[in-house]
Structure formats: structure tokens, C-alpha cells
Image (cartoon, rainbow, N blue to C red; front, side, top):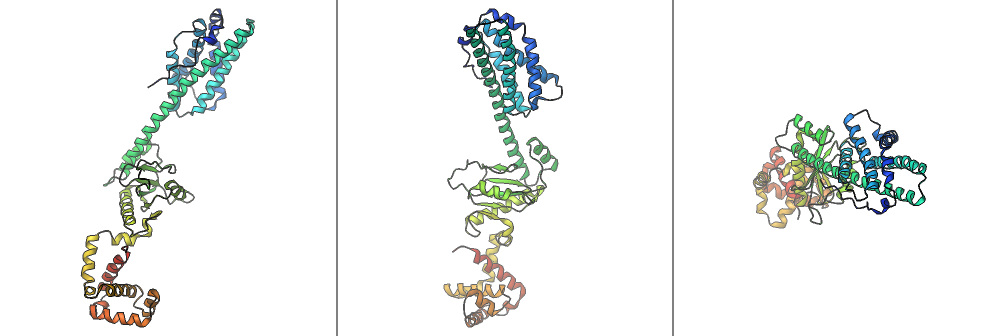
Length: 403
């Protein structure tokens, strides 16, 4: 904890004030403290709270110490005030930890300073102090209020920074827990979600991100509220809560946050199946990088499930392709490609010559010629439903490969 060293208080504004005024003002400290406390609690909504003895004592102690500091500096302008700075630093920290904004804290300090000056100024007028003394008293009051506010603001800011860092660490742990395989218990997830201030959704989707175009993996995204982010994994990943909920603009917001960065969105699943969404998103991202799936923008797994299935076990698919497409190996390279293209179109069109010709933009007679060649190579196997199914799987897999 680093409390700022007071920089604004000098002996100059206090030098013009008679030291005898200190005793007179000191006698009114309790009365002024009472009025400051009442005014702050009635004027700032955040401070209109049920009675809390500890809190009230701390706030009142701060008011009394600030006023005491002011009077003590009149009596001795060189007096050290580190203890008051520490008190207001702790008040600032406490306000941040209780969730009150810096605006509320600063409003309270401004109101307190105004009330204190009004009461002290009235005393100064009753004593018929000359203009020079009155001006010095006003300047000294403003300097003191400024320094007190600086200490309180520093405490509030430090607590917010620490709280934000801790919240981020808890959300990172929560993301890891959600994506654990096997899944963590629902109770463990719920407990950590509560401490991370993350409302438990009914479903989630996991997003896997491509490498940053600039190569900066520390790039932090301005993602929609509630999205959990981990940019330190490979690939970086996000957890999006309730992505299918009607009326939510997370899809558009996410696209804006990614700024063109390629991303794969896993299927929407219950919390206990988050690892499956991550696995499919990661697989989709890998296929995007290889050109098998679109390599730009946001790609959704659910739009390419058959491709993900075909590439789920590439070694097995390669063996299937080698086995069922072996008859094509006897054809020359360009001819083999034409026959494979025609066979896939024939299988997908329900064995219709006209549909194959329209799909491939060739003459029906050319289709018939190629089909006769295929019958010579495959024989009766082209009429076996299981062989036809295997052929379509193998040919479709081959057609997806770039180049």
C-alpha cells in the first residue's frame, strides 16, 4: 500500500492566519463534525444506509481528523499529517470495497468541505477577521480539502485496481474449471462463479480464436459483458453465456470485438458439456487454417458438422479412401480426377444422368461415357448401398481438400 505524500500543503496559506484562531476553532470541532456528517448522509444517496456502528465510527473519525488537521496546521503550519492521509486512504479503500463509486466519494468530500467552510467561515466573520486573514483561511481550507481528497481517491483507486485484478484471476480460474475434462462438479462451478461475480447461464458456447493478425497474443479484446476470456492459451478462447437467448446482441458485439480476427464458435451446450464445445471449436479452427473450412470471419461449428465428422479421425478416413477408391488408381491423373468428380455427382444426384450433367456443366453423353468407364472399374459394387455410402464419404472428403 503506497499512500501519496502530500504535495499541496505549504506554510504559505496558514502563515496569514493568527495562531490564536486555532483554539477558537478547536472548540467547535465536534459541532462542525456533526453537521458535516448529517449533510453528507442526507445529500449523497450512496451514504443513506442503515446504521453500521463500525462504518459510522470510521467516517466520523475521518471527518474529525481532517478538521483537526486543519486546526493543527493553523497552530503549527509545519505539522506532519501522515496519519490523516492514512485514515483517508483507508476510507477510500473501504468505499471501493463496498462498491461505492469514486464519484460518490468525491461528492461526499466536496459537500463536507463546503459545510465545514461555511461553519468555520461564520466564526471567522464573527471574530471580524480582516480580508487578508479571511482569504488565507479560505485558501488553507481549500488546500486541506484537496489533500484529503487526494488521499481518499488514491485509496479508492488502489482498491479498485486490486479488486479488478482479483476478479480477473477468479474468472480465469472459472473458465478453466468450466472447460475441464472430465467436467467439474456443478457445486464447484457455482461457488467459483459466485465469487467471480459471473451469473450462471443455462448454456454456453466456446469460441476458439486464430492468432492475432499483428502477432500480438497479449492483445486484449473488448468483449461483451459476461464473456469469459483467456488470451494466454493456444488457441485463445472465450466462453459466451447463453448465446442463443433471443434479444441479445452478443453475436454482433462479438464480431465487432474480434475486428476481423478469424474465430470458430463451438456448439451451444449445457455447462457440463463445455469441453465438447471447446473441442469442436478447436477442430473447426484448425480446419479453417488448412483451408478446408472458410478461413475468414466467424465460423460456426453447427454449420459444418458433417465436415467435422469426416475429419474427426483423418487416419481412419484415409484408410477408407485408399480402400474404396483403389479402382480409380488405374486411371491417369487428370482422367482420375474427372471420374472421381463424376462419380461423386452421380452418387449425390440419385444416379440421374441429367442432374450430373447440369451439376458439372457437361453434355449428358459425356456423363454416360464416364459412367461406363466407372462401371468397368467398380463393377457391381456401384449397386451396393454400403459401398456407395463409403464412396460418397471418401469422395466428399477428397473434394473438401484445398487445391
